Image: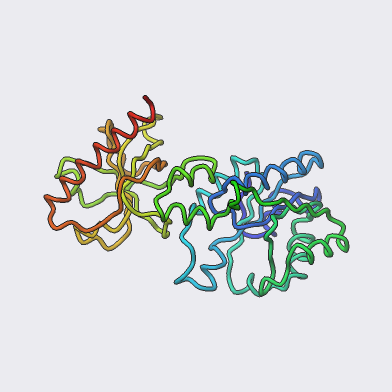
Length: 314
């Protein structure tokens, strides 16, 4: 898959100006089952037309540009999002920096310059809550009118529903914040995961007898607490364990850290890239009165995580 930071580079790398493309547009945070349905429809169009499939997405999330203090937590980092898009059959991931310049493009110019002139879109696939351009002035209707003028096909995909609930990144964030890990997995179509590189911590867990893999969180995530998890990326195996995601108030932590204690791993994981899958929330994170109380609770957490995996595989 070709990864580009602007439409011009995407076109140059993949020859879109000569061949044309099928383009789908969105933030795709989490690449949940609603996104997957839209990507499948776009992939089918690309295969029928024998054209490359281009995803046009943005980083950071537009809300993080306009209101960084209230922007939603991420379901996936940029690297995770690109990997998930590739797994869905995307040929070109064009991740445009969302900045003042992009935010100021009028919706008519966005269509003519980005979609048509740069990406040479022959078909555009969108969701049913689609807005674009300065002030979100563009919508499905304006894009349909533009498709007639510019000669591309527009396909609009309805939302995926779970009962009466629309599958959306916002709904999944709410589930994760509420500790509904298993329900969020149904909306994602997989376990919620966080990937990252193992870094050095303060070694406190090792001195207490609970050695951990430590991953620094560079972006705010939608969940905090203690979880039963599994980890891939070490020795080609999957390991089960228990993880704490938060600021560790009992030890005076200042930055958000993911600490994972694995049940059956003894190796040196520093510097390795791992993927942590969240299976069940065990408890919320809170401050304990003493280190001894925290250590006693960690032992209980480990026992609960053990029991969860035994019951789920029994």
